[in-house]
Length: 305
Image 1 (cartoon, rainbow, N blue to C red):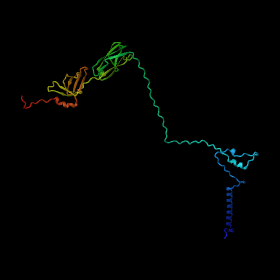
Image 2 (spheres, rainbow, N blue to C red):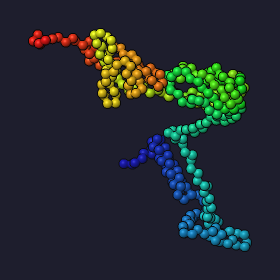
Image 3 (cartoon, one colour):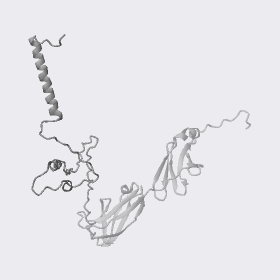
Image 4 (cartoon, rainbow, N blue to C red):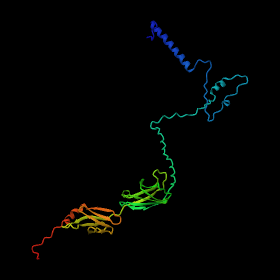
């Protein structure tokens, strides 16, 4: 049995195409592995050395006639490569989203105050005032000022309020200070000047002290039936002793009892002529009530005359 029937026209063409394809495959394989050059090509691999040699030492000297042998021609392709790498530049870092700009704090501007203008020297001298110490709530008093260069046009001013002033000499003037100026404790400034302040003196001070007060509590009253003389019950705050005092009595050698009533007790300072009012203690009014109207004594039936 024949493998190919050449009598058939289709089989003959297949055989031709198979032969042609085989020939093409042979040519391609020849070109791939051998090539079509006239002479054989020998690929020489250079051996690596720890120390590279220069190209001039590796390349043999050319003949004097100018011809180059094929071996020298092939070795020129394997000359040393001079590689100069560029400096390495790191890429720019990307922006950190967690880092943000914080502006520096604004400088604190300290306000500068201009230096105070120097106080002009007073053209008038106020050396002293008399009295320099008084008690509050006392009566009006006469104030005398001593100094130099006083004129009749100058007045005494206490806390900026002008007082009627008497001119005595260039070294002395005086004025009456009303009781309302010293109604409360504290310091009072005194200056002698003209109303238009063209002439003025240096300042002085009057010290107004709080007056001494009685150290007693008013705790009750005893009122007899005839109402001729009420007796006040006062308690010393220092030793808690209870005293019976009448109108006109002097407590602590200074405070005279001038009025006794069911609401208050009035004491007058015998030295300063200042009145002090002491209200009856609220907690002791009830206790003192029975004393204000004593129950008359009833004689027992079995009492003998």
